[in-house]
Figure 1 (tube, one colour):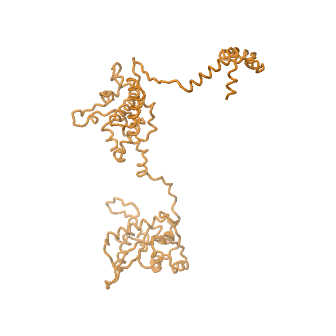
Figure 2 (tube, helix red, strand yellow):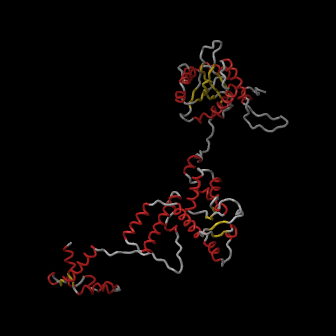
Figure 3 (cartoon, helix red, strand yellow):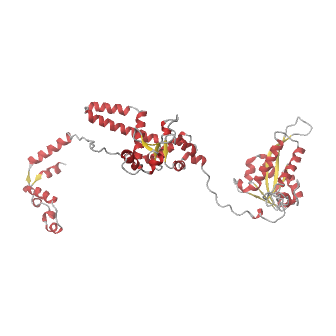
Amino acid sequence: METVRESSSYGNPTIDNQRRMETLPWLPHEIVNCSTWWDGPKYLQLSESEWINDQSKTEINYDAMLEVVKNPPEVTHVLAASEGKPASINLTEIIKCEEFGTGDSLLRVTAYVMRFINNVRRKVKHKVNKRKQDEILEVCRNEQLCADEINHAETYWIRTIQANSFASDIQFLRNGNQSKPRRVEQFTLFLDEKRMLRCRGRINNSSLPQTSKNPILLPSSHPYVDLLIRHTHELVKHSAVTNTLTTLRESFWILKGRQAVKRVLKRCVTCRKLEGLPYSSYNSPDLPSFRVSDDPPFTHTGLDFVGPLYTRPDGNQEKENAKCYICLFTCASTRAVHLTVESFLLAFRRFASRRGLPATLISDNAKTFKGSSKEVQKIARSKEVMPYLSNNGVSWKFIVEKARWWGGFWERLIQSVKRCLKKCIGRTTLNYDELQTLLREVETVVNSRPLTYVEDDHDGVTHPLCPSHLISGRRITS
């Protein structure tokens, strides 16, 4: 650093000429022919002993530099405004509404900014000393915002938005030297004592608050309006569009208000989580071949268990109620059902004797049986069942694990069976014979349900198709 300072202290009168030369305009051909531009000053080509050393000037410059570093000059920033025409401040260019998540945070930041401006104005106006300034700033920094400051910030935002969106309407209401805008005539606009645009209705004689009788006019698309709608939506506990819009119109009239509220509510995370529609499913594939086959009834059969149910013992009342499960067989093509409460192997033998031996059995996954109850596992997965089915040429297929919708054609019939049982039994406990009788009656009713549309035929000529028509040739309950 000392070497640099010493080298910078060497001077020559030609340096001033070179500096002046660097500031003058030059043409390209003059730069090419200028030796000073390419080789530098001539004194640099001499030996170091021949350089002129101007120590007095260097020392003065060095001392001046040290003085500037020790005592930097005081810089004063002055905010001045013209007296002729007051400047209109666009608040949206100073504070970005898009960077705030709530309207409360935006108003609080605006209030703090306006407090700072007022403090600066007070300091400049009264010319208080530095100690007093620090005391005022410290008090203002620790003091919490009051309601008047936040209300003033809200008023300033509304006036700024209205000045940007309804400039022609405000100009007409102030001067009246132009044609009457359509919006002024439509909403009967006027400026209140705070210079805000309000709508005048026909209920000024009512006992409603002044904000409800003359709401403030706001545009439909503005970030501040979006924050206002979101704040009102949270106040009404995330209610629907109508409730949010009604609460808004107690103080504000937003152009295209319903459309604006719908736009904001579509982006509400809480509402989308709890009320959002599920993902649209793919187009349903074709039904499996066993669902649309022309084979005899119960050739392809679905199997599931319903229960548990409790039956009371006969005669001896000291015994506890016995637990049992209903075994439901349903045809995959005719949608007929067969109900029984015996053990699975005996139930299947009775079913095969009455309906014919099926070629395919479809049921829930084996792990589903295992997870449901130990009794079902003993019924459906016992050692005697699988050899009996394989010896009789019956293939047992299982649906995909944890995919209950694959067995929708028997789950829907379980609902129909349970509905009949609940409404008939209630809290009553039946014995085994009564339960068997009730199951036969429920089976007949379910097999007599219509599969086709029931038309309003006054002549009684048409009859809907039932599963009993396909397995017995007639409707059993008729």
